[in-house]
Image (cartoon, rainbow, N blue to C red; front, side, top):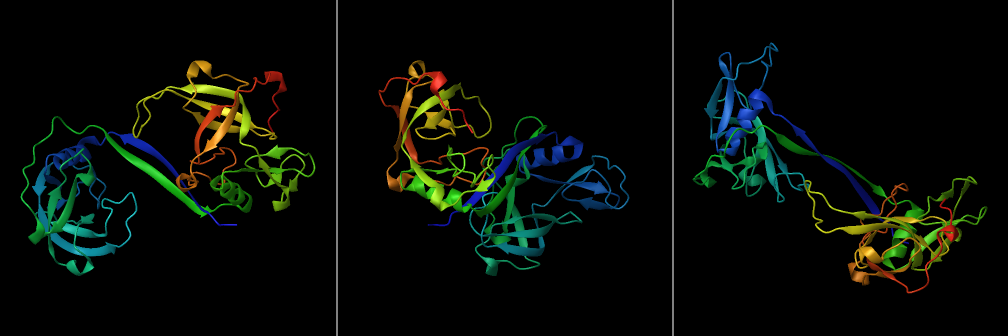
Length: 329
């Protein structure tokens, strides 16, 4: 049996008003400028709302700094993650911009670690598409900088949105790994309790009612046919990252021989006005090379079949009366 790494990312957008100090700073970045803020006899960049030494509120007394500066320290990022500003290796550096007394941590796009050094000169470069965020700008070695004609945007940046995320990584539990391997093989693998005789798919690895652990000997293969127990019509709404545009069905389906339903099954090929509770359906698997089980995890509360199904289609059999549907575990 293969081992499967599992990765789950909890992510949501965090929206806030940037306030009277960060707002102008982000607006300036959108417009191709970098601002610091006067604090006594110093200029802080990035600007802060409070004096870091006394905690006193600073007046929004801004001064333009840079666009060039000097690297005070740096580290090389050889394997960027999807949340990094570049998907190729780059450096994070503390850059003290000309006219500023403090350094800002930011990305430097360089050919390699041999192109980086403490004390080197770098220059800000602004992305072609800017949204009023700190990611609108990055740095390059001064000799690699190019002239840019930046067109200012309209209005002030009053709202900023960040994606907050946390990724969990581990391995699928043995019973889930067998379930996942079954999906890759075009099979539905559940487990039958030796005490109650009830079949769960995907299994939790134990019978929660009888309090007994289940083993590979309790694995059972279920047929790809089943009955619709319930469904809802999903009408997509617009939100960040939305890719759906057409209404579709999300259904709960009891596979034949199972006492636990498969929830959230996408139905795309059966007309909405023909779909109904009690309808007999069959799962059609994708070709083996196209099956993907990345979404299969250890969370038994939200079971999934991953991305292995081409579609669900009617079998043509008579409907099953609602009263004959099994009671879910």
